[in-house]
Length: 155
Image 1 (tube, rainbow, N blue to C red):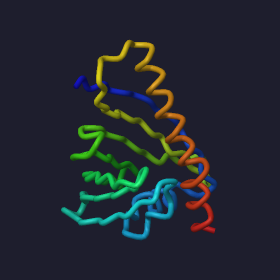
Image 2: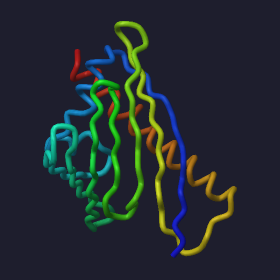
Image 3: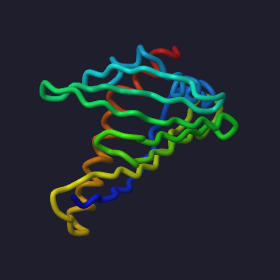
Image 4: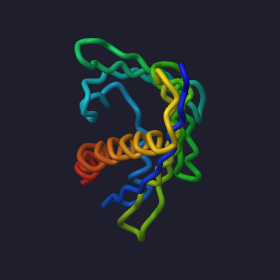
């Protein structure tokens, strides 16, 4: 099966200071499941001071999908990476950075490299459409669910 690489990026504004946004975004734990649009169960194991292994189990269409992720933290840069170790998007990697926008606001800079298996190779235009669909889905999760939760929890 061919593997395609989907590259996309976006920015998400927050109405909280950068240090608050970074702390909230990197406070991974087993209670994170309700933040996501799909039913999710999460476990977190700290590997080292700056790395953790997350295991998410999501439930789609009556079946469970398990994804293990290695997360590396870069607090001095207010950044982190999320690399899929296994699961349907094995080898995918996501890069996040919180950038201050004044003293009371911040932006999330997101860059994604999602790797997907397909029954056949996709054309460049089909790959671009699929990358845009992934971008829209991730933007939707941040705008509708994660950013409002961050701002509500930080009030």
